[in-house]
Length: 106
Image (tube, rainbow, N blue to C red):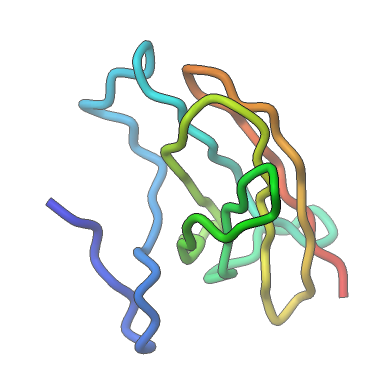
């Protein structure tokens, strides 16, 4: 079952934070919350880039600023684009849940 798509014509799936039914002992999960000044940024576009900077995936943050990617273990860049500003974070992801806070600045 695929995630619902946004209503604004973008193909990025809307996010949520439930991990029910996901075996986090076998999956590499990169997730976090997009914030600006400590406040969640809803509907930011969050991109996952590989270690060479190549685009891999994009999701739209939830109304609470939450995002999630399933990836392989390794080095990744998570980049947020929003009306509040842009930001990025580098994460070295391992199997399991990798919490990655992502602050944006205008």
